[in-house]
Length: 132
Image (cartoon, rainbow, N blue to C red):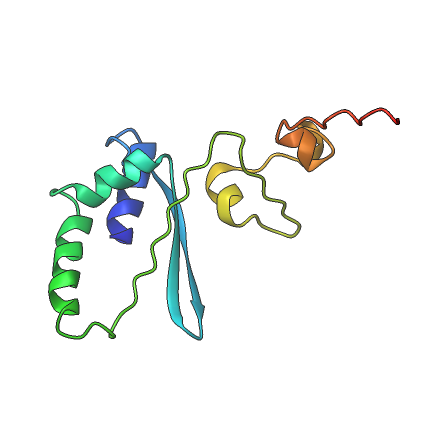
């Protein structure tokens, strides 16, 4: 599936295909196994890809559940989806290369949008109540 998504992303960037909405991913290995973190343009794009009969996910999903019935403890699927409003997230990076959202969506120096997280995310500070 990741190969299909990366190929579509590249073809869409060249103007050769419509984008599926996949922005990029990262695979993390730890003591529990492999975790894949994916970034998508929208929740609707994730659902459209996952349920499409012409892409890799739906057939793999059906096969997984068929096989998993025989040995439910063989593989763990941990799926979390977060739908975040535009300008509703902030990530700070220090180092030679960005990770996560900045790696797929680009980075902006913090001072360009404000010096504090509150300013960058557009939150306002409530006025202090007058002393009684």
